Amino acid sequence: MRDWLFRAFPPPPDTPDALTKAVIARLVAALADAVIGKLRRRYRRDTVRTEAALLRTYPGQAGALVEQACDHLLDCWIADCQRHPRASLVERAQRILPKLARLPNRRGRPILDGWSRLRYLVAHADARRWLTSLPRVSHYSGQRKIREDLIVRAFQRLAGRPPSPALLARWLDESRSRLACELACWSLPMAKVEPGRLRRLLPHLRRLARELDRALARSQVL
Image (tube, rainbow, N blue to C red; front, side, top):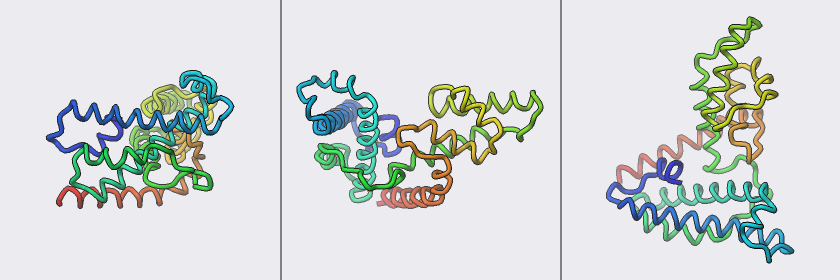
């Protein structure tokens, strides 16, 4: 959380490190309670299971709920930063913690909605940057080896793991723009966003990013 939330929205510079760690612990505990609570409501016959047993029984569903919980926290944090740009870390956490008690119902909402999906834009931009020196598609073995190495390194930086042989074989003949969408989507798999859908949504996500940049710039001059 320190790496992805507080890097984008750093606490005031005079915030003690111990206080930051305490707030992170409270936020993580609130998100964990929300995930477990939603699992128990969804699988009522398993309510007698311990939290650990519940997570072992439904790992895929738990992973999706963790993703949803992080999205919800990020949406709440951004909205609070826009409404209260000069708030202290404690003041912000006090307003946000009650909102984390129950995760919102996402039925009927599009896969890519709201501010929290800007990470796809970041992943896409990173992929394009790391693929800058990607050579053109070629049937020469030397050129294909260079493409393969660059693609593997870019995906490892995004996802923390190498791509599967099947994916790598499919990507070798893709253009750089299409490849950036592929790498971004496969490195963030929980939302199951198709690369073609991401390509169509890039203008919308870039517009959201510009709006957020303007809001944060205004908060810094208040």
